Length: 498
Image (cartoon, rainbow, N blue to C red; front, top):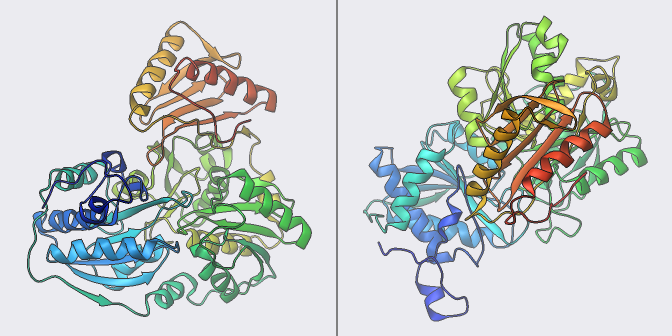
């Protein structure tokens, strides 16, 4: 195998012949690039050859389920990936266009030992990537990604005979049946279903209708140009549109899905956006009643209520804060035997007996409907208001280049630790602790906190803040945290801010 080049100029002979892969695309748990600026089709074939070689080295049965999201270039990229896998001697079981969780499900349904899903996830058009895994329901973590990177960039992929391809029909239908089974709502429920014209448009409305929900579709026509906005239920633009649709239709809630369907965003019947970490607390309360002593894992961007909520404490539930990222969270839920994992970005990891352990926005949508069904006298806003009130920021992402973000973050963390050592404060509240499992979660004396970490998928830092007391204190915490971040000139503008 030829070593891929890190840069080849588009619209040249070499670009159509020689593999080109930017090394920065190998991230902590995903492979993700801008296409075609950072990877070309021969580069994607080199990735497939490397992935197949990794399987062979690990003694994994040479068979893999492969799918693609609904973007105009994803099919070509998947076919280039498949070519490399077949070169490596792997039999590819092609499930066609899919959601990421449908691809994860196909590992169980087809008894496939590996999976590769071509998707840019929630990234805007112009991005592509691959989510892959060997040990279901897990996906590659840092160790596996580093090994794959070294094989691919080192030109160490090995061609072997015996590879092949076959199309697998019926996976979509089996996936939907796995989610719906025999459940039907026992109370009327009207739901705005928002898919941003992405891949979930071909799944979410049908799934909700099959459990007896009245669906109000919002941008549910498949259109890979994303004419309204990028499907990302963590972005305020999409959440605000969902809130508008709820108010106009008098719906009971809105459920929104990202580009590959592994995340779910929620708006209640009053048009209030319920960030996923708060929705997770609502679900955790319900699960803790159904499964006494339940264990949960939550990411460091999430609300402090998982530790402080009196109801969860009374029910004997326990919670661990862990690294942000779908692979990190899946692995921790699996390793600890937790019932569920919750991530502020909208990934929910529902393990047995609720789910299969991977992140699936469609299953979360069904589980939220079941939650409402189990609380016939209460609306979603009633469940929201029953939580202790806190003031939370959205996830805010200032630009920081992939080549610099981890070094910049290390300096920011050191500055925050020095601030703590001096008895310093954020928002007028003394710093009581700093959790550094993933960036710095700066915990304040009253339970408020501010987080800064590096995005694993995009050239950004990530900033989140929460106050248990007031909106003014939330803004003060953010202002003080941002003042430390702004000492780093490599940090650019925020995508959204308070």
